Length: 107
Length: 286
Length: 152
Figure (cartoon, rainbow over the protein chains, first blue to last red):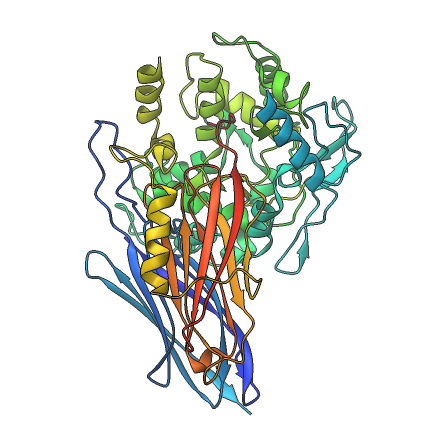
């Protein structure tokens, strides 16, 4: 149901710099509030959790409810102390986990 | 009534136009659109014989937060469709064992300008052909694959991908091809023909009243330079013929089939009405 | 008439999503009391302060309730006692007031986050932040949601 997460952050930063990270993932975010054309409730299926780690340490999280729009977008800040790798994880109601990684260089 | 006035007033304030609180009207925004460093033509002089002096992209009629989504190709969710189209480009299908890529190895080069110049004349079918139908023609004749069902996700994705290769290029039809001019004439007649229980023509809203509010919507010129368009309402890519059908449905008329002669004629005429505006695919609208 | 229109809508692909949030089924919308209860749960015994330390950014008018940008930020050092633990966003006119809860860390550097949310109707959006010292900050913003244009 979801695919291809997109992440945008600088390739490099100075030590201690605060950078902005933007993320977008393709997902219907079926709210569980809609009916299909036969009048049946379409079951809820959303991404319910978004987690960002830097060198395995959690830096940002979002607990997500059905009121988040289709194709969830998140923008947030991170203070980068050293070179390393960001890992982004989205968890679907159906148990699927979507992941992507991005490295950043601290000069 | 009160609600309408409040809305109109707030919209007016946002567009910082000369404020006339009593009239539900708002000028298109005075703004420039740059996508991925490319400046789009969102306002241009109309071609000869056009009822308007100036053409405005529908982007200028939207609220700032909707406009912002189109400005940033990272945030534009329509780009997921473009990416899907890029992937489909190299997928082999059909009896000939071919993909789009087999004939068009470099879509960024080969497809550049295509989205700005369709509909074209299809001499075989003796009718106009748009991108969707051209994809189907390739699939049937060259790939030995089935044509797509109308509005299949793959059809919208490939169409968006092809049109996106012309991002920023001005829309320009060659009406001298075959009998395209005759179909343009037919499209023009349809554009001005009132239809449905509400007895509305395209022109009633998009020519006579563009800039005004139709309930909570700010009526645009009804330009089609950004299709397939990511619409927030459905939260996915919406094809031009889907949009045509939606408009006709709202007039409570019988809805013509996608790619029917009527809608191909209308596509030809309405595309011409946007001559000189940039291809914006995938545009973002409300 | 309503029925007719609805079934007509259903037939034509893209329009099936028309009910997205505007027409919640079988569930009443949340009430301001539900929202108050959520805030109390989040804040514990602390009284939320509305002195402007927490900034909530929303458009005055949302052109489509399916995608309304919302941003939150709190001025803080983001270390020690002066740090934001969580910011919760609530929409009191939705079927369920919960929207999202952001959790920050010392590596956040700055307590700031943005997303896009669904609003079922014109309503107040509320953000509540909890600091490491237990302080609670709150901000509220009305958003007008325009529903009922044309536009298929």
